[in-house]
Each structure stands twice: as C-alpha cells, then as structure tokens.
Length: 144
Ligand SMILES: N[C@@H](CCC(=O)N[C@@H](CS)C(=O)NCC(=O)O)C(=O)O
Image 1 (cartoon, helix red, strand yellow):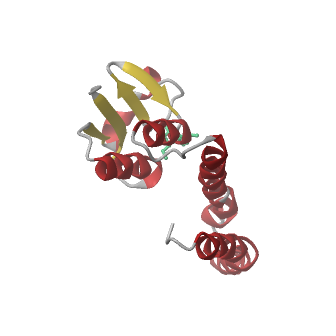
Image 2 (image 1 turned 180 degrees about the vertical axis):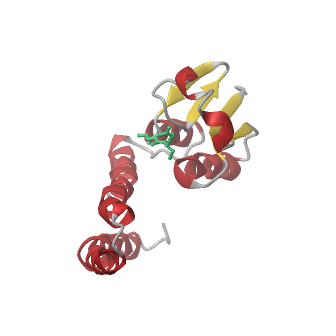
Image 3 (image 1 turned 90 degrees about the vertical axis):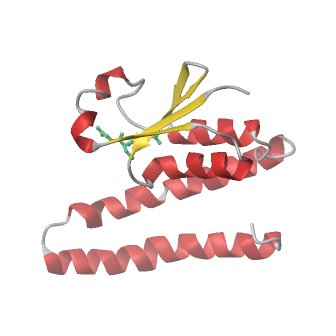
C-alpha cells in the first residue's frame, strides 16, 4: 500500500473530505495538521501556496478536488464508469459554488448590511442550491 500524507490546517475546511475518504476506506495515512503560526514558513514549499496537499510515496498533488477525486478513485468511491465519475465531479464542483456566495457576507463590516446580505444569500443562493441537493437525494433513493 502506498504511504499517504495529507497536510492541511487543524480544521475541517477543504481538508476534511479527504480525511473522511481515508476513514471510510480504512486506509492509514499521516494526518499532518499545520498551525497558523507555522504556515508562513511553509507556504512557499507548497505547490500552489495553499493547502491541502497530498503526498503519495513522496509525490505531491494539491487542489482539494483533485485530491478528493484521486482518493475516491483509489478507494473505489469514484464511480463505476465515466458517467458516474462525471456526476461525482458535478457534485464536488456544485459544493464549490457555496464559497463565492458567502464572500460578500463575510467581508461586509456594517452589521445591518451584513444581516440584509445574509438573508438575501440564504434566500437566493443557498436555499435554491440546497433544494437541488435534496432533490438529488430523493431521486437517488439510496440516501446518497
Ligand atoms: N483551490 C484550492 C484552494 C485552497 C485554499 O484556498 N486553501 C486555503 C485554506 S482552505 C489556504 O491554504 N489558505 C492559506 C493562504 O491563503 O495562505 C483548493 O481547493 O485546494
């Protein structure tokens, strides 16, 4: 079995899906968690200046979705054919649409504007997206 090392911060964020995949597959790995104080000294050693990064027998790959898809395929969760893999990638990327929706809310400093933006983002962005996730769960009929 290859030697896996996953490096991310000590939080869920973009690293947790890979950790869950290791857990589901029962595959051992080095779960390296970088503290924020250490990060400045390590950033320039990473492939893109960000985490997570995965090392497989000393070879590095970065970008969370590439890591997740790689591990999913290695562990048998990557779809039984190209069509299923495409649908899996569809959902990986659909989750990525959430981040940009939250950005304006996150950076807004004025409390009343922030409250207004939060409501708008939930109604126009998050609810329609999550309704689609719910619909897919219903259509699949298997809880996934
Ligand atoms: N597109 C990249 C984004 C990675 C990313 O933004 N990572 C953040 C943590 S979630 C990071 O490394 N931040 C540290 C920094 O910006 O210096 C991915 O999906 O892996």
